[in-house]
Length: 331
Image 1 (cartoon, helix red, strand yellow):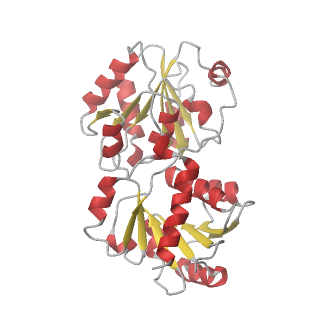
Image 2 (cartoon, rainbow, N blue to C red; image 1 turned 90 degrees about the vertical axis):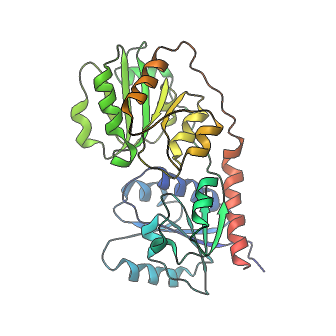
């Protein structure tokens, strides 16, 4: 018989804060209302640990003897379910009859990382079809969700705070300053295009080395991690995503909530959604295609879009994860 209150242990060992970490925060905060939830994280992930430290038991660990530390913590916590995030944490977990293991596919599947998992959660059909060829455990499909704070400042005040004129046309991208996210591609395009009264805003961890791009003419705004991304989505005229690879892309779904036009690179992780929502797409290896789309939408007089995001319901999809745990536990 399945317990009403599960002991759930999440493990994520990344040091930055982007879509995978946001997923963990959202899921943990929902699950803690009905279950006993703990988290093992990297002690260097200051942002993640700060958000969750007073809400659940957070165990920040260093790099030295990580596998041994995790093994001891698992013994003390005695979880029913261990939910890992990203290959690094999955790779450090052994199979056991004392608990079930599951991992969400935030990145590409590698058998050496996930072979000890009892189950894997994927967010799209393409992932499912690829992984079922090699993974011997159970594969579950569960959509991501949109869970954003409310807008807390008006558009005009937000622009004023950023020293931007009301007439400034704003392209924005949210992710992190890492080659995967392709911020360098966007920067290069905007340097070449030199559009009038136009600003590119980039938001995410790892921004400091890019600050030199900021100029007095406001062509670029380089911003680190922010607590309320809604205030920024609200002032974007167009959302840009230039990831070189992705299993999905949290920010892509978030931007749809604000009914913004989107330009996105096409890759295996977002193929299903780009087609479903008719998103403007470009080949990451064809910079001129991206430049053409930017110029086209920059000149457009009708930018508002409407997306049906029913499948990305926060409560429904978090509850679906708990149902997946229970299916694993009865096997």
